[in-house]
Image 1 (cartoon, rainbow, N blue to C red):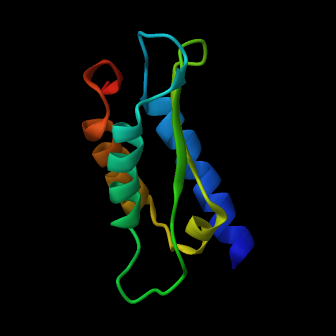
Image 2 (image 1 turned 45 degrees about the vertical axis):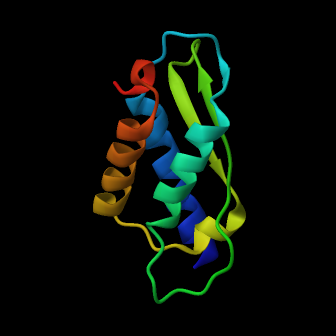
Amino acid sequence: MKRIAKSTLAAAVVTVNALFSTNSVAGPLSELTRVNVQKLVEATVPSTMSIGKIEVKSVVADDAKRTVTVDVNETYAYVPFTHDSISRLVKRVAHDLPQQYAD
């Protein structure tokens, strides 16, 4: 089950990466952005799950690759994913990013 969850998480990261474009210098986004994304990621965990602390380690923009990468700890691999839940998360994260990354 852990392998399937990690594969799905990898697909989610690729999806997130494909949806974002950037116009600024590559590098980590603000701590406030990381904290806001942290809240969004935590909200995807079903309330009935007791899997430990989910942590967003970083939110990094890369101009050359036209991506924004959200790095989470391994605990997040235990969250069940569906195409719908991934799509909702991507939209919420995109909405919460600074304006130049929202597209």
